[in-house]
Image (cartoon, rainbow, N blue to C red):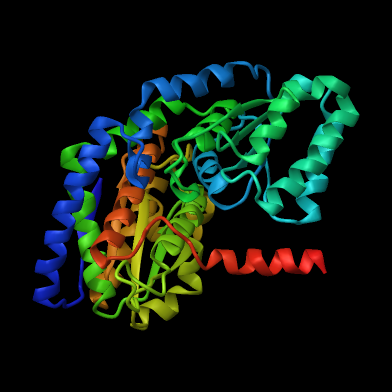
Length: 420
């Protein structure tokens, strides 16, 4: 699944020390996965193979038959994973997904329009997701949407609503009083690592995504042989971070995978973006995640290929083309006669090889991930791999991968502003 290339000179001492930390951490993760213990944050890598928990999600999902529209009310880790997987795997027959995350009236009005146009309450599912049960944006948006839903369908509206939150959260208590179905997820698992809990698996099941294959891929990603591959990738990135890399550019050759880049952006940024390490000492190896597609080859690529320093690129491509178009058409034959015998898949492959060749020529560091096919299994495997890799990266660089103390800054100021 992976091909690795690293063109940065690193310090040998760091490599030795980092490898020692990484090997010990891999043993920890493997133990957590094998025992399905929910005492540590790393259990996010075990939840995909927890059949008892996943079956509970599946039973709830079965209650929502005939759903044509899913309105997901949640922000950040509560919605990005679902959106990423759905964008990668949806087809023409999939239900629609409307995400209401920020306090943006446009998204809210679109949700209202969906509620207005469905003919029965069973055609729409509203999934409200907040681990704390107090997230301001989620609670405000959910309040507006549930009122609109009740106005449209009366008491029956509760049939189309499900909450995903911590078992004892304020949101859970309110929904239970209203007799609205709720699901919880293991307490140690944080939002950005929660895609394989009910946070992601419930809405994706409602969206008719093959969650069994997703979970199978995620499970296989953390078996012993594969987890060692993630360790090597984490080590490479950690060494590059200490040698001057400050940006990780997630480059999706297929726009289907662009939203996975946005999910990864949060995963990496909130995990590595700390001012202090676990020893309470200043930390200066933060990595800024960015997202690109092949369309950026005619814009941002000029900057990168000019040997702009400090960028590691994560290329993601498909081994097989998903296009049904085999030839390049008469226009290509007329204007680009040298290509008239080429197939579309061959041209796509040549583009990828051309980009990687240019990066090699300019000695620019990159990791190239090739998905064998655009399947639920491959997407599940890939996203679980990224989760494991980020955990290991943070362990090696000795920062807490699971907290986000500075996010509270804007929340505190927001509360103050709303009270004034």
